[in-house]
Length: 474
Image (tube, rainbow, N blue to C red):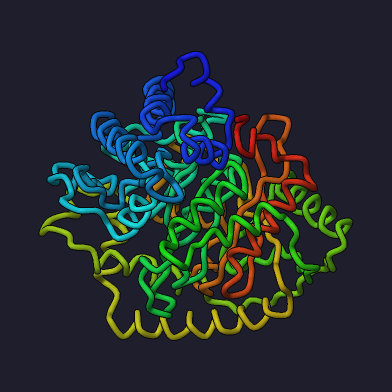
């Protein structure tokens, strides 16, 4: 089955073509897994995409899948497809470090997190754990226990975060796609930084996510991929069982969204507390995307959003309070990096009634913002305000300034988590320095599939769907 002469071509295949070849028996799970492990071995030392790689476990899993295929056919929709979870998600037999010295010596997990179990049940092969910032808090992927995740488009720059390692791995061909989670932009930010498609589903859309409908429930699980169809393939697997059924993939492959009322906005909830300045390519990407959709027959107009003040302080209160729910050992702050320790100190000092008031205000803010966005089917915004900074830019600053720079860098992502809406980051253009610039398309509740179809249509309109797709020759 193994054919060394053709394995380099696998890197140019879409995840969909890879899946089809595996499902047809034209490629073995072992062959696919070995290829991506070899790419990882070659590229990871320069890019820091993985905190840890598990070649023995991955190849053993692939061999099991090949044996199952020989007897009974493919296991599921992702039979034999390699991927990797970020190092915030438990995978049986692998250590979960959270990118922190607090957990770096933890024992390997004894069972899969529910999301990992769902994706593995679809036939996927985990090749390791990808790099994250400490506890997934920042919008870059630097920590004190491993090399930083570097951007394959410019390795001197960050790959974004907190799914930065996963994004770097996909963009560099170490993985065909990667699952991530997004509490304030952690899928969309690295997708935009590395030129990928990144879907943030709505609150509660993925069954294994926390289902509480509250602004305190910020984090959801979503895919990063090189095309919208690949993202849809992984997203359907993340839904699991009959909720997946390939529906998002079918929409993305058709790439025929209904005629939409599309609003365009650069209004950020961090204004006027922080000065938000957009780089010229961020504006150009938004303009180009809006113009392409307008030519395609959609109704495109400015979205006159008037976002209520106070978001910056209230979001920070809710964001940092999440650390109080983490099972931290006593004295953990002494082993944390400066930003995580600062966040923990803020959370501990904040009286319970002050947090409750912030939650109440943020809930009202979200309801008002959702009402305004509901005037449109989709609202387009930039994702990043400026180019991904160089490695060390954020961590060189005092914690308070570090956090403020992160907010200025990503002024449009966290508000979508607060509102609980779905959104997708879509690459639009490449600047003279070879960096990618994206837009964010925010949808109404339950429109993850239509958003992926819109992303696929934008790929067609903008000429960015360049991977080898479809079934391989028989």
